[in-house]
Image (cartoon, rainbow over all chains, first blue to last red; front, side, top):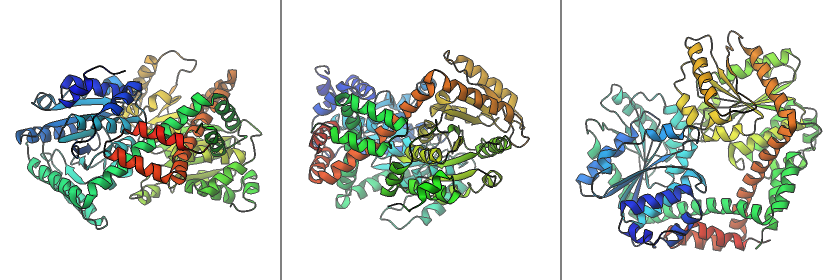
Length: 313
Length: 313
């Protein structure tokens, strides 16, 4: 189902092959599954996956580009995946935002791509995890995954990352929003972005106080002020990323994280497949249960139990 | 597993029984399933479910209370469910917000309750749908479901409603956010809330222009300016709600909507149950697949297919 040479192209990290593979994943069809099943097994640990999230206006893209350019200066190849939970209604407008990071995209060894979900199985988080397999096959040592906003979708996407950066602008007006979405709990590094703007020092102090309240842990999230515009704080951020990467290597932590992540991916795939199998193998039974539940003659949990018993083994 | 008399109490719409039933649903355990399986079948069409969503600051709770009080004045019993996707980290703070609607809550025949998800199966949207079964059993003719914010969670929750109101404050600064989350597509009535504030007229004009762009449909969403504070626009909003309710009754639309909703609930229950069954019946196989996927020796979709074939039929 997939083009001859696609997998070879990916192994060589060719831009055209990468773009094509990501389009297949975005579309989420049979071709995506064939591609993923055909990717070479891991030869290395895979990339250090860095997630960057935060509310709109946090300057995430500028941060990602500045960080990426700094990595390139240090001789590292970087891939960037900007994940966008856009709706069909407004998709165009939001994707319009994404024509950027042009300096990073044109740097040698780098690849920048935005991805929305259309048909992707299991939604954005699955698509992002699938995309990371492609970047791993292409041998990228570092992949940055950026999301728009801070909803549950973004939290799910951030679960694919080894290290999560939460970027907040100095105003911090959105901090409650961010907290609500559960991002606070999963961030490894807090960045007060646009640190050239007034209020950055207070924001740093505020976040540090909050981090102090968190339970003891081997990793105390650092709070850093970064200005992408003035290229300030990038070195400290890179150091924090390296430190967190090293911690993950210790004591098999990275293996544990990878197993959790694999389980989550399998679970989503099982969930998706179970329903599709039922609908294709037992359409009448599904129809009968839908009718009964819609008339409140049955509850959905009893219906689900009966349906699952019908699945061919 | 559930208390004697609980179902009888629900039939009589007793507040204590309602509160207890909603707590069980929130906790999402075996008792919730027993309760739901034991609810009496539908004797009527069930309540007209009105969803109210919009960004923080849109004054949704004031709107819901004003609307509820107006309904009470017209002799209708109303239940309100305020759904809150709070995280464990910050749950307390956000729930603190919810001690309100005290006038409506103390009105005869009314019931107000906020609900967060803790263990609820399938998340907030499932819990909200389950709660609606409880309100249906208690015979409420109208249930309002309010959500906090406008993320994917909220869109999912709004799928339980017959009529969705999107409330936006005059500033409209959050309109892009709202659009992004896909709320625009599912709203049946747009409300510019806090219409006593400056900018309300422009906001109405802006939204009307947007609605004009939508494809032809039997229901053209009205755009209404409402001030809960000054009790302005409530009558028009109630008329729009009644009109939309009537449209749903036509040509079996409501049945169609209810089937879509039932299918969504069964699907979520199937997804949840499929994974739980696999983990309890085939823990070794699950462990082996997790290991293989975590080492990139297999892809999650192939693993999911193999696992599902192992499910006992």
